[in-house]
Figure 1 (cartoon, helix red, strand yellow):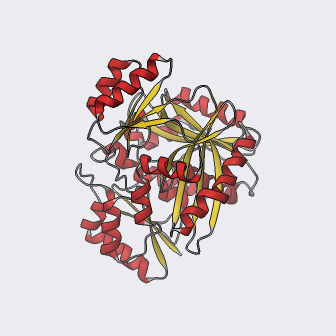
Figure 2: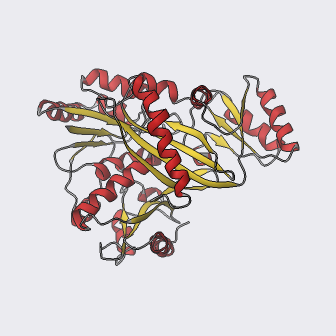
Length: 407
């Protein structure tokens, strides 16, 4: 099966941002090599491609559909690009092929229909359960706990409910129905008081679906993410659980294997295999899915956010899996992946230079730079890999943080 990866950042929170659109360069190179096709908005940096080959990765066919346009996401650029459409047609004509997206929104549906190439997703389920409220309703139906929440179409009612919770000593989150990425992407607010809640309601109302309140679960025992795939035969496979890194209510990274509480990780895995996975498979589910999970002090798993698409952690997992096969004799490893914020924009070559000596796969630990598209926007996605321990991986990443002057 030839994979055609179009990591379109089509969620409304990402549209128009050159930085967010550049995340279309992370997934394809992490997941596939020779024989597959990856489309990006802008060309991938040559210094990065040379570095990637040096790690032992083969390269897929790379086609850019840009340049970046603030009014278009990658899927819309591909639809408008004769060159990109021709490349897809050639790949599909050479044998069985499928389209793989990141966000699964209307631009992806329109592109798949225009191309006539099967998409590895179920558009109906994806569009329905992109709504956080729809997923919370499903959790209630399936008997899965989720964080306490309150929805009302009247913004004043949200403020009153939030004020009552705050008066009782609880902290709240204000979320948009179709938000993603936490506070950092702008679809969620963590108000410190009622006045901040009022401002957040005014700011977010009507922008990205309905608003709702969520009571924060505190203190937490663990934060997990679980990822799985539903194949064309309806089989639920590749159930993988990660410890999550969240900073200021925003996704920052992932750790594997999940070690904070292995019993909780196994409980999450069983729930996917026995409840969520079969539920979606029975309704024609296809492709990649993931959930963010909060575990309270009693060990109860709260199935908080559902993504009917690939999650960022699956890219890191696939990259590490391929690297283990290419350079590490398939030895088991620990890894710590984190998105860093740099003090200034840097070309890829300069990042590689600053990290010299840390990037060479060796018997103990090393770093991988996995996203060439975002260093020009003062960001860097780094994965520290250790054959010994998570602590060693974290120490290496902290060394890189200092070298790059990153947060």
